[in-house]
Length: 504
View 1 (cartoon, rainbow, N blue to C red):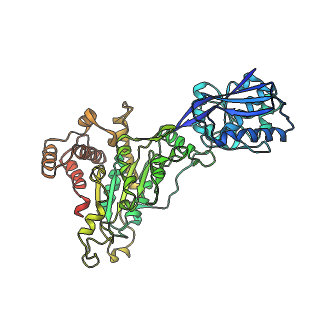
View 2: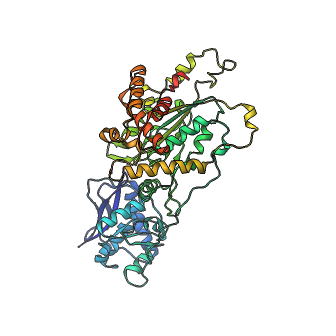
View 3: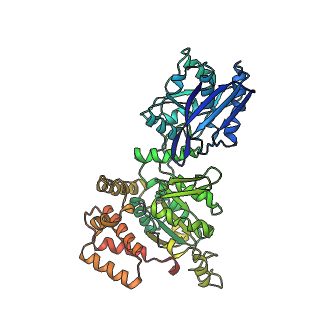
């Protein structure tokens, strides 16, 4: 007779149900796992056998076959240990079969029978809720999975606790959600001396989730400005927090099961590989662009990244998702992020300073910034120069608005957009607007339209550039509290668009 347990296999952020079938039949003693298991899943038989032996449960001298269905889907990860053990215990009639068949489980077994936390508890809980199953997982993974209200989550410390639960000796208590993690303060915009234009561009970018390019000499404050961006961004909404946490769960980045309401801020080094940025590797894991979903991807020293890595950003920027294609799997991850890039104007960094620039100026600047292709540069909504700060200004006390002031402006503008796109599932912020929706919300007044037409003809704006100017103008109007996009809003949006990096 076949006993069944259930678990999940991960394909991107989706958790697909897997049926674990166990048959104990007469024949030569053997323990085999079939159904396209990887090395970690195949080794589960040794961990399960030893864990049961530590509990004085001896396996019969028969043939034990574990089948992972559907058999043509690859199975990866150590979280198959617990469901394999449950199906085997049910087949041996140690625990009731009917209770196991209404449970989705995942967890890694130690040799002494204790349960080790695994990644992906949150997506697994979503899958269990769809199947109307109870979710059984290691106790350390319970607070993460318990954020899904529609499913009962049980956390166990060991396989012995699981057996006592199913035999009615000591029922497991339901897991409770982990603590909501809040961001840490300390980096205030008041610390940045001067750079008012760059601050304004940062606020516009944060308000509408527009992509921003900052170019300036070394030490002018580009990284300092970017580091203060999280302080002016609003917290994640409940929907965004769940989306982001599911990705971070698969990457093992959720601490103690807590859901993080702070927007992600990822800053990979320029030596990062394509798999690290876009996603991939042996398990097609999420990359930095997906870990920055609903947040910020800050790429310092932008031209220093490998050309192939930079070019792979073009499609995710437009579509908001990335397909990681491998020989045995095609995995899709969401990646709706705000790209903030920083770069020096040339290799030496002092192209605009005649006293310090190298002898190859201005050719060195053209060669250096030429590493960024035209199509990729065209995807930046805002381009701003960050000039060096005078030494005399560094001794001045902190001045200007604080991060709290800028955050209030961003929050007000985003509230306007939330109300505007409330009935549109595919749009959340102005950066998402396109087609008829963009024409409806961002068509400027007569003066603004005339200005935009002249600029498009004079400077040869692409269709993408034209639409991005409209989106930025709409965001500026939201910051201004204006229902209509007027001439000053278009003029400011154009000013950021025409600050071409190669003219800096």
